[in-house]
Structure formats: structure tokens, C-alpha cells
Image 1 (cartoon, helix red, strand yellow):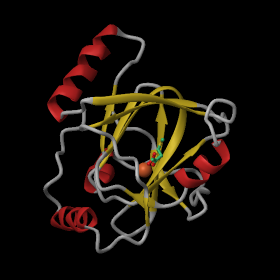
Image 2 (spheres, helix red, strand yellow):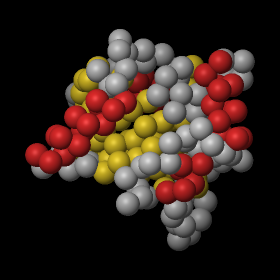
Image 3 (tube, helix red, strand yellow):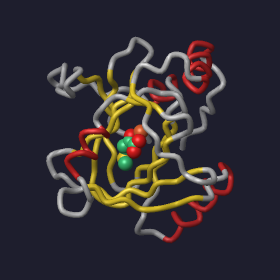
Length: 182
Ligand SMILES: CSCCC(=O)C(=O)O
Ligand SMILES: [Fe+2]
């Protein structure tokens, strides 16, 4: 199963009418992993536990993004939408609501990935990305991390950063990323 993903303009607006949805392989090409779970089903808890075990995600917390629940909402959403990368993976599991993760493709275009309840997404270390809510202005996300979390957003450009260099190498080799999204 693939999440809806399509190309958007720099400002996040649609470029195509109607939208042409991209296959999951376009996300795999840039190292993005995706799972769909069901937060309301107990089987999903086991599936989540397995992903956490397999990938070493010892840390977990929850974040609600909406105007009246997130402290410094305006500033935070502004920063989420500013193109950045991290030295580590960014792992988010959508428990409620929805939003968009935008990631840069190989040609530096923005791919918009629609995230809804049950979607889990892993952005590799070093990928340029940004996040925005949709018009419903609400999501509750689980954040996972290996060990003590580091949320530092490194704004573009970061071409000398080791995680960026490693990422660029992996993408251009066309290998090195696990293709096992399910
Ligand atoms: C908190 S959701 C995602 C926003 C983001 O890219 C980040 O937190 O680094
Ligand atoms: Fe991020």
C-alpha cells in the first residue's frame, strides 16, 4: 500500500490538475520508508513493537500539532515548514488527524506525502524535508528515536554535514536503502 504522494511547487501548491499520484518506488528511491498500521487494532501494537525492536527505537513520545495544544504553535509550524535535515532518521507514526511531509526528490523537486491515521513514515538522516498541517489543522503523532532524542533541525544548505554526504552517496548509488516497506 502506498500513501498518496505527488509533486508540489516551492510554496506547497499543486502543480498538476488533476494530481498524478506517485508510486511507492519514488519514495523508496529517496530512502523514505512507509508502513500502514491501525492504531485502533491490537495487532498493530505487536507490529509497532516489532518495528521498534528491529530498528532500535527505544525512545517514544507523542506530539499534538494544532493551534490550541502546541505551545508556541505559530513559531513551531513555521519552523516545521522551513526546509531542513537531521543527523538522524525522523520517524513519525500518525495516531490521529493528518498532515503533509514534503521531501526533495533526486531532481530537487518537492514530493508531498499525505499522512493520515495509521501511517508511519521514516525519513532517512540527511534528507531535506518539511512538514505542514492540512486545512483540518490537527494531528497527533508518535515520535520515535534510537536512544536520547535530538530534534535539531539543520536548515538547508548542509552539504558539508557528514549525514548529508552519506545520504547523497546512498541516493546516487541507488542502493543502501532498505526497500522493505510494507
Ligand atoms: C513534528 S512533525 C515533523 C516536523 C519535522 O520535520 C521535525 O520535527 O523535524
Ligand atoms: Fe524534520
